[in-house]
Image 1: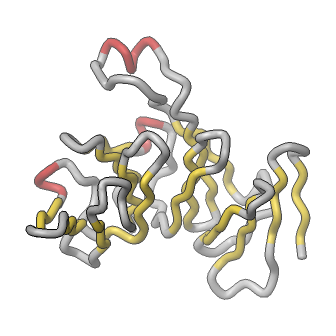
Image 2 (image 1 turned 180 degrees about the horizontal axis):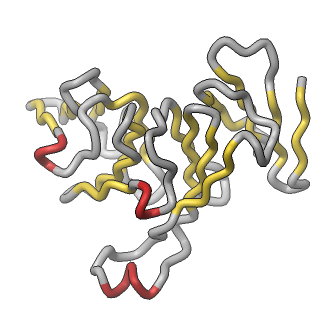
Length: 173
């Protein structure tokens, strides 16, 4: 992922996240607050935060100073290997993995988030398991189309799924 400040972020399997600022390398691991050292995908959201989907340790968000890791206590399902993370035009951050789709709206904030000093942005994830919506049962990969529709597929699947957030409608191909 190339961040807006020009630095590059790289995922590793078992060694955390690497950042290169053009002159020096920095490694972030679970000792620094990153959820898991097996990072799979990275996203820079519109607010400049770096989001990391980890194989088995939730989703982590880096604000440039410290990491915040979201887990089951924040609404994520337990024992899900996240393999994709992306942001839609409305600012919502989505993550997919193991037949599960998760949604995070950074514009919402609860009283407990404010009291915990977590700063601006949301603190709860919503989870949509494949039993609730027509998702592939395998690890979910996704991309957002120019018109805002979200396309999904799963490892080993022979179908694609399209979600139109404006119409809240799913189409299976």
